[in-house]
Length: 199
Image (tube, rainbow, N blue to C red; front, side, top):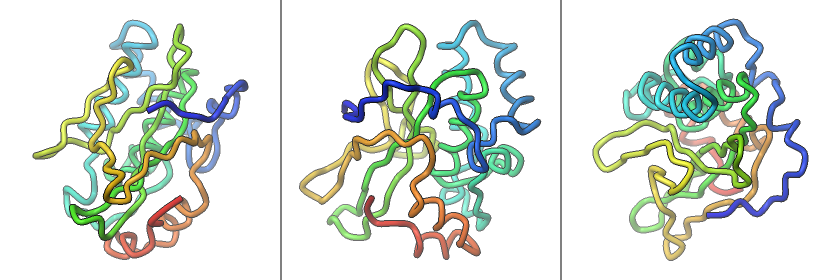
């Protein structure tokens, strides 16, 4: 899927804020450690993806009630839903000056009911003119996400017939509807009631 938004200025996709807090010491130290074990930005991006996918539990899979949203807290507590894990991966990539944005899908149950917005990232690696979507939500039976700039390997392909959507917009910061649900939720069960069903 091509992201349709024209992004001539990459500065916003390198910025830090309260959510993508890549100036935080824990984010910087994690990035430094990953960089020391890798060779160049492509290798680093893959290592950061694998780190977030594999070492930070998806709180739904792990039945962890805690809700995280700030990248440094996701790294510290090692838990979060797809949106939180996307914030952590974005921070790690931006910490190494790799333009990274947030993007989203609308997914639903098999019959098209209970839609929710699912969080991903898109990365622009040196030498590339195309933003490549990545999904670090974490693998489980039936889900096998992998880092790839050539062919997307996301958790799910959307089913338009079920009302599912690949949103083409590349966000520099989480949309208010997503961020506010994460910040207001008292626990993960409450979060499921607050997450937006569409963007």
